[in-house]
Length: 301
Image (tube, rainbow, N blue to C red):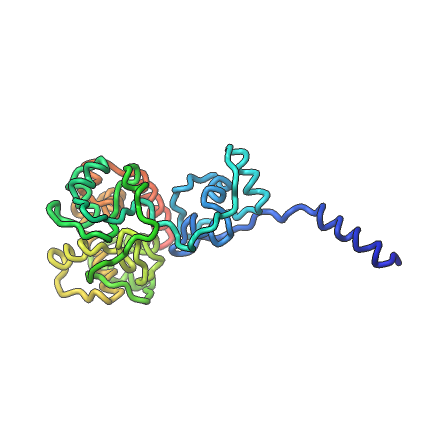
């Protein structure tokens, strides 16, 4: 038997020579983004995106598998792409706001932001459930076109709700069968409604987006008011997860009627606003959203 003092250097040599383990699979869960997955593994979003052949701003589909590389693999992928730096830089622990979110500043107007964003006032209003002559409240997070300069100016920590409004986010989950039941009662394709709910929140009523959409179906306050005033046959409970589903289903049904049953166009309208889609076409993020929902829909047939 070799003395221990001779054996230890040999073991250390093996440890040094052993290659790093290969990438590991990660199945995308509800609410996860490339950023959150990268951050949880101490990588930059770009490093994880490049390794997986994705755009750093791409949406990830729930249930899809993302490969989490080793540091060596991530650095090699970045080097091949002409970049460097794979691990996540130090920050305050706050995730970046959702793509396309902008926090209203004092003095901002809808007309001014529309002009700066390169869209019409009506399109920007429609995206956010506003009327074109509404006054904006400083601190409110709104949705803006991805390609506009506004999308690059969003706050690191946008205020999600500066004033009381409906619906309310509550710590409640619903099931696919509950969503399907609501959809069936209202003549809306159950698989479509369920796919949108899963894409939006993973069936969680606690979700609030950076653009202030709320609950299972991610309903904007303006959309909630529109549904209550024009589509609902009773008073909806803003704290009820099932009524949040009901509002989303009623709005989806409205979009299907407006589009003559064109599901892809209705899905786009749900995300971007139908008036905006008709005026300026589908934004890049909207195209990805439609693709995600269509991919998910088959799972709920």
